[in-house]
Amino acid sequence: MTADNIHAVAFTGHRKERILQRSGNNPYILGQVQLAIIEQVERLYSQGYRTFYNGMSEGFDLLAASAVIACRWKYRDIRLVAVVPFRNQSARYEKLDAMQYDTLLEEADEVVILSQYYYRGCFHRRNDYLIEHANVVISYWDGIFKGGTFYTVKKAQGMNKEIINLFKK
Image (cartoon, rainbow, N blue to C red; front, top):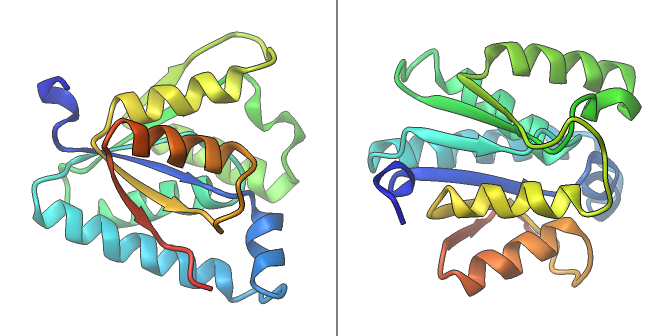
C-alpha cells in the first residue's frame, strides 16, 4: 500500500434498478442511500480520508459521487477521482443519469480513463483499480453472490480492505 491510498476510499454498489428492486421499488431508497453515503464520507473525513475513488456507473456510484461533491461544500480538500472503464461509458445511460454523469466528471478532481473502448472485462479492471487504490470500500451489496459488486467486495475482502456495507435488509 502506498502513501496515496492509506487514506483513500473506493465505492462499489448496484445499479439503480437492482437497488430499487431489492427495496420493493421504494423510490425514497435512493435518497436514503445517498444520505447514508454522506454520513460515511463525513465520518471517514474526520479520520483523515480525503480521496474518494468512484467507478461512475449508474445507481450507487452516481449517488456516491454526488455525495462526495456535496461534502465538498463543507470540506474543501476532499477529492473525487472518477475511474472510467472506457470512454463513452454513459452512452447507454438514461438521459438524466447521463447528464448527471457528465456534470460529475466535470466536478471530479481527476478523471482516469482506463480504455478508449469497451472490451470484455473492462468493468472488472475498473473495479480492481478502485480497490487497489483505497484501503476502505464503501459498498451497497445486497448479499447475492453474483455481479460486479459481489466481485469487488469479495476481492476487497481477500485484500483485507475495510468494507462498510450500507445495504439494509
